[in-house]
Length: 482
Length: 83
Image 1 (cartoon, rainbow over the protein chains, first blue to last red):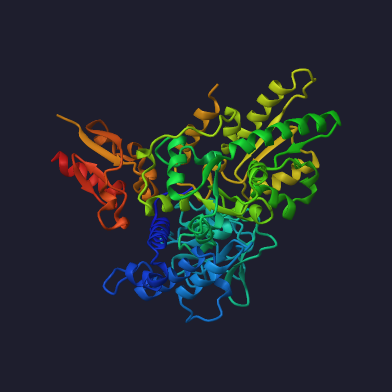
Image 2 (cartoon, rainbow over the protein chains, first blue to last red):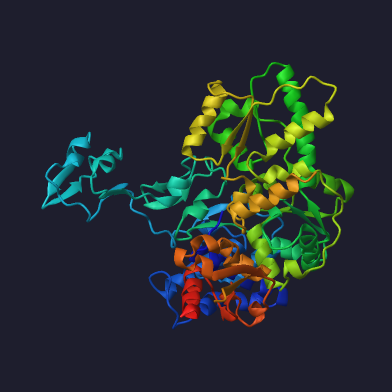
């Protein structure tokens, strides 16, 4: 979920520029100038100076070209050279996120801070609340001795002036699995890719825009330019991302050069069928719990951090995988591009032979802007085929459970259907990850656990454009249509 | 008195550059302005094609176009129109 801020605006503006130059065929000549054009010498700086702004822009463009910034060995290498690498590569990288050290502000690690609101009062409850005697009042102000402080936060609760605040490190705070950390030796923030689930929460949390996502936009643009049959597979969350109807999005995609648009909701129909059948089977075999498999960041969380829950994860493939498979079966030469709000899908796609590339809604939006296409002004073309309404609901939290419930009732009227006792985790955070292991141990109720890594479901994804509230409403309207 | 007409461009470029976030503008209006303003979405105003894309999103207040619009600049312009 993105809200207006300068980091988002800059990133989107940059993407639009890049794609516009690509479209004109002038990217190779102009790419090295972009940082200078965006921060000319008399411009206001966003960071300490325009020179730093330019360097950050350069790295940001590298990431948009799909290059891993941390693998840079020659600082003087030009963007045009990286562009040539990107144009020639056959396959994108599988690690997706990078920390851009020059943009990182190296946030202070001390978590509790006594502000000027402290009046050095007579009662001094903070000094009593602290279990480690880490607080003393010096010169009329309370001070924390950080060698003693254990970050318990008891002091914040007792201060009558609310003078003690918690200063978080936003990326670390946002990461549900503690995969982003400070390296003590170099004092640099880094991502531990063995632990990272590619959820993208650090990326949206960092107010310095220091976490970069490696894009595959150049690969997609090149495939279209080379005349390949590029198929746009749009995630159900696309409804509500742009002003305009689904049929208008389909014609906009054609105008961009995609051969056709296929709704991933078609794959969601298959996921629902299989998942409903699997649920019935598992319950008949007296299993205790089944949990969803469609959210890749959640499945990675289970694999890497809660392996005891893995036997309960549905073995049903995701809507994206079914959709790609169907397209490749029809035409093996087709290039499949998943378009969604998700960072983790890039990881999932890198392991799925049938999905070639992943684009985000943000990138699609930038592409439309660069091609000067206004979705709502496009003619509405008829969709390839009608999709069952409930399959479109996958994009919102609780959508999977409702789809499965409908499916069980409709498709298996002859069978004795087990009762669906759904439980939901709407957004993964540190606390929710702990909850997952309780589910594995059978300490929590329910026999069906639906988990979405993003709050609100896919509509709340890190690369969405539309507001969650409005997008949810739009998705639900289509999903509830009879 | 006629209400101040606020039109938020929901063309794709504006939407991507921030108009999506302005969809809930009504919630951010100060109480004294709430009944003096009428907010609507507008099809692409075509202003983004005027050279610089960086200046989307566009909003018009009684016909006056605001580039790079955000909640504060919109409210400021509304107040100007009311005086």
